Image 1 (cartoon, rainbow, N blue to C red):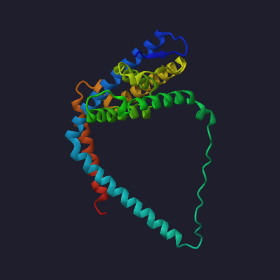
Image 2 (image 1 turned 30 degrees about the vertical axis):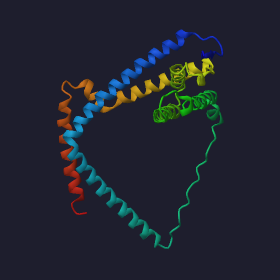
Image 3 (image 1 turned 60 degrees about the horizontal axis):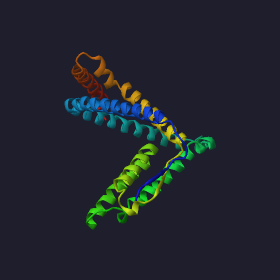
Image 4 (image 1 turned 45 degrees about the vertical axis):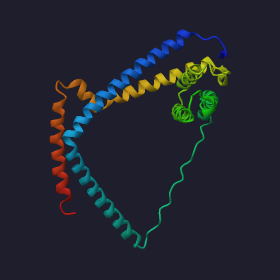
Amino acid sequence: MSLSIIKNEPSPDDSFSGLQQEIEALEGEVQAVKSNLAAFEAQIQERLGKEMRQLQELHERYKRHKQEKKAKRLEQKKRGKNWVEPTQLQKSVKNDKEGAVSGSAAQAELKRLYKEAMVQVHPDKIAHAGEADRLARAHALTVQLNGIYQRGDLEELILFYHQLMFADANNPAFATEVKLPDPKLRLEGLKKKKAALLQQLEQLKSAYTYQVLTTYENPLSFIEELHQYFLERIRVMEKRTRKL
């Protein structure tokens, strides 16, 4: 039985495909930057892990000492004649109705597709020979579906749903109609995803370690610089905490 797709209205495929290509390129760049940063930061951790832990322990010790001194001073103030318990100001909470409404249409489409897809991942809808296989696949698909829904990625959910439906298109249990979200909502979702990826890429590239990787002739020399810095900080903190 064939699967029919109901389109709300004609949409310019070029707009979708163009944005999707840009998103794929951005996702590839984000992944490449992440991989490079992770490899470099792993080298730093391997070389300076001991010094990092030592410095962290010294900071925690000094912090506890400062907190104890503050608590002691507060107790002394409370014993004074003019002590008045401070009143905490209540923060006013402003309801942003406009913000709450924003994205409600896309959220409704996300929920609709999620519910429809969840029905399709039920073991009874999955054509497999064995009960164990059907249950295992249903569980795996449910986990994947929940992940997509939690990320709020409408386009990814549409792709998942269509892959799921067409993969079992010969199964009579899948005879249904798929109503695609409004093309405007899809375009809005893609634009938001592109903006989020651009922001993520900007944040990754603003990391100091990325600056080192892209500006140092030999990025490994930075690790030695960092090592000397840690040794100096450890010396200072050991001096501060010696009598604690």
